[in-house]
Amino acid sequence: MQPIEMSAVDLVAALRQGDITAVQCTTAFLDRIEATNGTINAFLAVDRDGALTRAADIDARRKAGKPLGALAGLPVALKDVLCTTDMPTTCASKMLQGFRPPYDADVVARLRNADAVFVGKTNMDEFAMGGSNENSAFGPVRNPWDLSRAPGGSSGGSAACVAGDMAPVAIGSDTGGSIRQPAGLCGITGLKPTYGRVSRRGLVAFASSLDQIGPMARSAADCALIMETIAGHDPGDSTSLAVDVPRYTDLLDKPLAGVRIGRVPEHYAEGLDPEVAKGVDEAFAVLKAAGATVHDVKLPHAKYGIPTYYLIAPCEASSNLARYDGAHYGHRAEPGKGHRAEPSQQADGFESPLVEMYCRSRAEGFGPEVKRRIMLGTYALSAGYYDAYYAKALRVRRLIRQDYLDAFQSVDLIGGPVSATPAFKLGEKTDDPLAMYLVDLYTVGTNLAGVGGISFPCGFTKSGLPIGFQLQAPPLAEPLLLQAADRFQRLTDWHRRRPKTTGEVKA
Image (cartoon, rainbow, N blue to C red; front, side, top):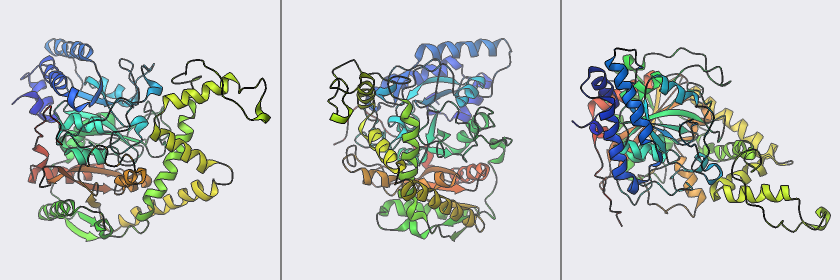
């Protein structure tokens, strides 16, 4: 079996046993990236020289009998929203084009200490704002299963690179479904941990109370392996939970007897694709056959999830992105003629050069979707509207969280679709922001409630597109999420299927 066909768990074992060297493993994935990234556009930066140098050092230390980290030699791709000292961090935005951070994100530092090999930074929706990866300033990512379709977003590059065998593992971030939705559309496994389970230090912020970092890989077992490295308390992140990290990989192979899984009838409302509904029902059947029981549960305020999310997230984005003004951070516009001011504002007939620079820098640096969300958030936070919009959304968020906590009194997990449809055509929703926002219908509740969620493939449509299934769990119940997903994957082979990526784009 070739390295690009192997799971992360198997690769780590093969590297440890000496069946393959870190240089051989890394070279195989770098060659795959070189052959396919021109078509898929999953990577914004590839560090071939750096990756091979690091791999050679790992091989030398292994040969010398020196201690090595738990992931020694494993290639890993990083979403370009994570700070890295040795590669640019652009957030797929012209605002940060060429920016090289002075420090590593906590997750990146943990992976370095585990001797992972970073092959590159993956494409994404600009500043993680989007559900299709079409908002990147550097071009959209294409879904390896059908190159005319979107991979989902915002972690679309991370999902596509794993689906396309360009990396065995990628790190993504999830603010309203940005790990789970692209994982579902690309036929891989993606874990959104409990808020605070993984440090956010060094993650360029979109919505600070919602953002969470997590692994994307072929299987739940691979995600468990990565979680053992990236999870844990970080004193540098005030929201990081001071809770011990379990040995997730040791907790996988357990039966599901007695596990209660909730099914939300409202998930089967108008708009759910019949093939997706069928795949989800069949997934429930597999879990029941594995010993779990399925029970209907209510999430009464779930219908308010989208409007609540699309008030809270833009408000936090408006605050977080205010720093990118061309003076302190980010792209600075070239000097030019000032804009004509209102008579009451005029000094010498024009606005001040500083105000002009701010306006032009932000206009040039941010893309349309980022501007839209900044304006939505700024409006909702403005005097006279704060209580009507943002404060009310926070109250509804509390109700949504309570719905989840109440449901978890009677069930251990909640299952359902990841998205209402399979991967949609590139360009299909770009002219309708509301339609694009609705792709997060089944995922935003997890973030609003701060609980954990995992998505994994549960079937394929007649046209060969992956169908994703989602499980949600109470806070810090990642072991149960991974256990249930792993049991499902031991009984099915959906996660082992590979797309036949070509250089031709389907009509």
